[in-house]
Length: 542
Image 1 (cartoon, one colour):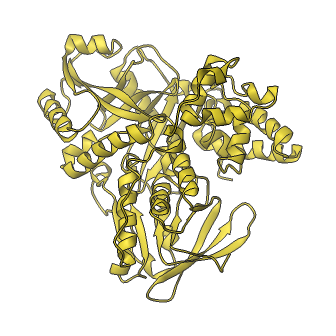
Image 2 (cartoon, helix red, strand yellow):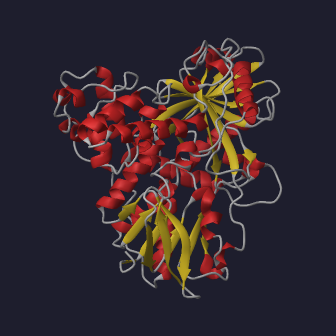
Image 3 (cartoon, rainbow, N blue to C red):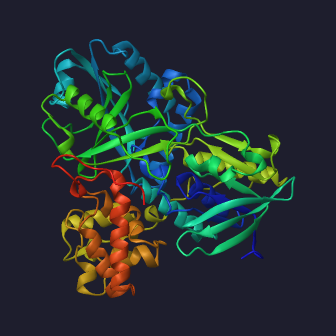
């Protein structure tokens, strides 16, 4: 592989890296995209799964970021219509809140003005009675009213990254997952490529390139370590945690955007995947990036704040089906509140910082604005080559699942309604391609009762979508791993399908199931709780 040269190597196949690879490949560059894990397995999977304009950023006067986010939200509603859907949100306003009715109304007016080209409805201010009609479970004591507005939601952010990666590959990019960058190579003045290792087979590689983009999220500094570009810390990430619960008494029909009483920080209670997603926290983090776990204190904080605003909820730690935590790859800032660190992205040109030319690192970046970030980055790559950038088409070209005609209803004859709903939601207009692989009864039958996912999806994940492990299949292809039991039970069924149809040996299947269960321990799933009843124990990494 040392003899193959690329125009661009992209390190990191999260949503930002996949977006850069797609854009660059569509504009004619010879691209290599690699990641030490699976596509979308890092920061992308740790978000609150919202495609939003960043209403809170107005408080920090990041008006340009809000406008950019709102414009990109509208684009994603078009190019990924099967994955990104409108979401109504309600902001309850209570006596004593830091953000009173006048401030909230002003924010809503500004939000509407900045999204002048939107397809979503404008906001409405509600009085106390109307607010309780909209969300009867709200605590009525001290409630002054509410604001109802619209943003968007991407239930399966992982799928957004996977489809973006797949489209990059379809446009000519080479994709190597589970391939870790182990060192940058330079000739002193310019970056010339990198060394890498397949983390599953331990095979080593050397790749040559004219340009390298380091978009490894929280691992950006680790990629630069040992190089001339690694002398200054770039990432100062903050940790955000979420909990997943089933429907509870008073659970809202619409998403709630609530001011926490404990610290005034806004958080969300969101209907999601037939469950409820509650989060997030925001605190500085310098721990292990490969094993990030929601703490007892964070879980208790989210439970307490939810019970405060919805008194009849009465949820406790036993009601938490699972949780997840991740690190936002924000700029390193020595002091100040974590919530005040800018959410704008920075494209670092190391050639302008006494580092090798042709090397860029991405600091920050939001799920909502990944496409715009990619466009700016690829423009910078062409500028570094002394070339005029060709037009960018990623804002108008749909992702694969939003392309072409929808799968006709007759293709689903005999399938449960839940299966049809699942296939359309996960694969969009490509659902028929999955059904085409269902050539035997076991491939057409659901292997996961919760989601309705069918056996053919296991084949599709491996043969068509680049999955290499059972974790890839469940957590980032079929999305079975996002159910209330994180795919436990379905994991054995999926592995059995792989034995029958993909050539896995029984020993390999057993190993994959064991590795998957070790992987999901970081989510503290209730179904794998160890020790005294009601007391989850977090297993150590590895």
